[in-house]
Length: 454
Image (tube, rainbow, N blue to C red):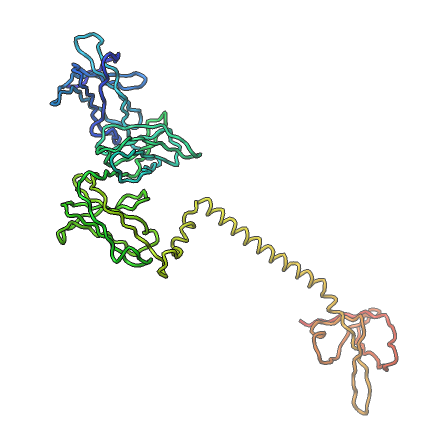
C-alpha cells in the first residue's frame, strides 16, 4: 500500500515509536531507502513527517509482526545531497480523533560527499573486553560543525556537535557505554556542516573486536626466541586446540588494527605463523593472540598469555640506539611549510656567500688599479758609453722618475732602454752621455713616454 500524503500532527499522548533506516541510513546519491516506524503499541496507522519548511507527511496502515510489534515501512528516494533528509514518525488510532503518540527521535539520511575524510580511532584500542567503556573519536583537519557515526548493519546514525581544541581542527567523541556483544562491528564516521545537507567522504573503517566471547585460550610462542637482533627473521606462532579458522595477533599499546590470518590444521592444532622479517626496533613490545570464526570475526576468544619481545641493536645490546631509518623519521615528518622555510634559508645563505665573494674580488681589483702606476715607476737606467779600443760598452745607471713597461721591470738581466723624448715638437732618439760615479747628471726638463709591447 502506497503512503498517503497528509498533514496530521503528532500530539504526543502515547509513548513514541522508534524510527530506523533499512538497510542503512547511509545512502548513495540517487539511491533508495526504507524507513521503518515500529512500536509495541497497537496503533492502526503510522505517520511519517519530513522536517523542513513545508513538513509534508505520509500515512500508512500498520502491520503486525510475528513478535507482536506493529510497524509501517515507508519507501524513500531517490535521495540526493541537495536537500536534508530528516524524518520523524508517530503512531495513531484510526477511530479515536487526534489520539497519536509522541514523535520519534529524528533520523537523518546521509549521502557521502567528496570533502576531506575524517579519522576514526579508539583510545582504548580495537580489542575490547566486556564491561569496559568504549569511546570512539572522530576528528578532522577540516572545520566541520558536526560528525555522524555509522556501523555496518546498523540502522541508526548518531550525531555529535564538534569541538575545536585547535584552530582548523574539529573532533567529536561518541560515548558508546559499557562494552557488550552488540558493540562488535565495523565503524565509520562522517563530517558535515550545520546548515548544509552535504557530508564528507567516509573515514577509513575501524573494527571493534570483543574478546572473551569464545571459551578457548590460544597459546603464543616466538622463533628463534624472545630476544632478537635488528635485521634478523622472526616468527610468532599462535595455536589453539579448538576448531577456529581465524587467528588474530595484537600488540599492546598501539591503535593499529591487529593482524589476521586464516588458520591451518597441523600437529593436532589450528595455528597461524605471523612472520616479521626483517626485524626493526619498532617490533619490540608485548603481544597476544586470539581465535575467532570467519562468520563472526568481531567475536574473539580469551587472550593468550602475554609475550614480551625484546629487539636488540646490531651489537646485540638491547639498549643500542635505533638504526638509521628511525633516525630519519623526524625529517620525513616535516610539514610542507617547514620544508619551504628550509629551502628559502639555504638559498639565502648561498646568495649571501656569492655576494661576499663578488665584493672581495671587486675590492682586490680596485687595489690593483691604484697600485699599477707605483709598480711602473722604476729607476731609470742611463746608458753610458765607454770606448776601449775598438769596442763600445754601454752601462746603465738608475735614475728616478722614469716609467717602464712591466716586462722590462720584471727582467733581472741588464738591458738597453730606449726612450722617446718630446722636445720642442721634435721626436728623436736620445742616448744619455757617459758620466762618472762622482758626477751628478745635469737636470734637464724632459718628457718621456714608456713604450709597451703587448
